[in-house]
Length: 251
Image (cartoon, rainbow, N blue to C red; front, side):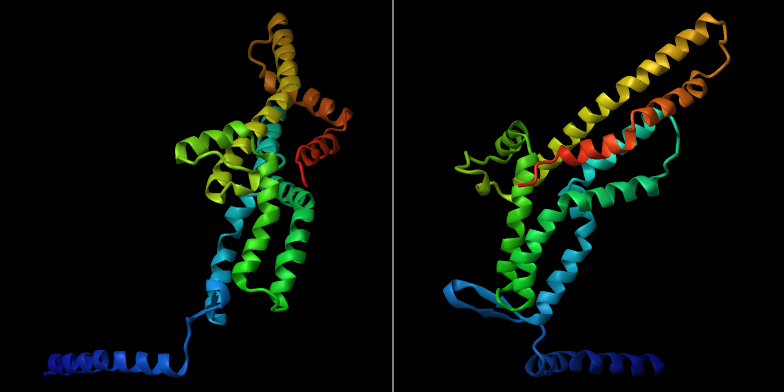
């Protein structure tokens, strides 16, 4: 009997769901799309908030892959490997350095996005779609300046794209992977140049220890003070940060 009672209650609740949904839709439209002038579409405020919240969840990935963060963090990681200091500086310090240096490099881009897209949208002068279109222009310009033509041509050939009349015609679906590939290549090139002096010190220390017959003494332990001294004497941190900041073309 109890089972039959629960079954009838479930049937009644299921029967009431369409009615409640219809009443809610009639009294409080949550997601609406209104046709605008020129064939455009205007979304309701709730739908715009949903889109913005979805975009906020993608900010970490965009910060890593569509800004200068990738090149900086890779170079800093290679520097730590070359110094042989294990976890010093630790990951949090390296990520913090890369984050704030990224903000410094990308500040003109972010200011342009704020002036051309965010502020007009907040003042309800433009729609959400137009704001996103305006915000994509500075980012597109920054990424296209850092991307190699060979990488762009490779992904265009793979994706079946034809020749573009101007760099502005390159879609983001093609530009983002080409930009990431170029950033990885540039980061490893800078890392290679950083590793050469440290490698020479390791070779010299290992040769001296071998000639003295100190076979059991780790060369890394003896070379570490010399590498730290070299890096400090040449004022390595300001030199590295300045080189990374000036390696980006910001138009």
